[in-house]
Length: 539
Ligand code: N01
Image (cartoon, rainbow, N blue to C red; front, top):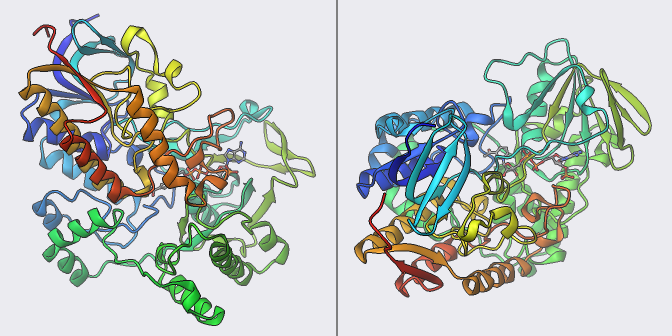
């Protein structure tokens, strides 16, 4: 094994979060930083998720991007309102080049182990390339949606055709031409890819476990004057994003009770036509807290599915029956319309479950479906999964797996008691996907950077969250979630998509409030953290 390289900070992951952390810690603080990434290039999620139709499933251009640099905003030409995966990846490549980041990133290097040395107050990592490195700080930008969820059906490993998980899509073009393709999963990845696959394949059979609410994305070219307007008002928009849950839009404060059912229906129609997430955020106050109102919006979407899908039996199978928006809302480009094609069929796994795979087919309770290719759009062990895969060992050699056996205890979604000097970007309990992730990453990193500066200015050796702070943080984020309908759904937000995963709400639903809390904690002398004096200057 080569000599241990020594750094101020090691960052794991070079997606949106890790790249920004490298820039901030290295260029704004002057730290000696090294990034490790198992992937062959920058991009994280956007490097891996190359399936056809992959797009940002939220209001995107130019908001799903870094916000901190006016120059960067001015020079990057976004072309569509709903950014495609290739454009996001090109943007991240540009970001890495522009800020000369690649020289400090080691690609194709998987971090196998990370251990905290209490005496040295440092982390040591080991890689699959037989290298070791140590640093005072370990920044985990390991990705909220990284560890692929692989279904474990009998015989699935014997399937002899091509098989791809959407989150591990090949870099070379996959041809569907003349093939019978089976797709399992109808979350964002399935709903984005199914219409694209159907355009080319001989036949697509969709195996659906839970029907989904999906709204029309209404993707269109971004007009030059729109982009110019955004650029000219960027500071104002950024401030607005920080205040409004990550998006710059003012949301409507209308009360449903002030309108007749007919008037409300007309408003839903208007927002459906407008597309994007407007139906969910801009109809009436309380859609995600008021069961009756939520049910009305849900019924409106079911009505749209009935209108679009010509075959009533298929339409029936596509009707979601849980509270609207409590599983991740999806923005689609012709998903429901795809079921009007002759080459697409739908199997409802709730009435016709998969029993087994053969080398050339999927056998369900009521029939056999011959396929040449299997697409697994089955999602991820979200948020906690990538940290558990890293499984760092903290004080006393206790592993994260041991600590998180029953609950993903942490403080502020970024620090963990027993794991000093370790910070997560988008950890459990952080706003993550409930806020614009690039902006969320910037703001989390700025807070981590301030905390590191505080340590260095005070000549302290380690910072660690207390268990009491973790317990009160847990109460705080759950009180917010319990006030809404989100915890009622079997969603990945609740860990319900992974067999055996503890059921716990994995996000912070009030992003703007969350970032205010981070500042409050720092202003109160890092309330909830213990600091240790420096033991030694050893590196
Ligand atoms: O994964 P998902 P995804 N048998 O977990 C089904 C983000 N994203 O990759 O609902 C049969 O949402 C599962 O069924 P059920 C976005 O935040 C972002 O689509 O659990 N089916 C579900 O239908 C999104 O929310 C972009 O009952 C099985 C599907 O597979 C998140 O990633 C683009 C099954 C998985 O849906 C995850 O989306 C795409 C089994 N054994 C995604 N196991 C961006 O634009 C699971 N399913 C940034």
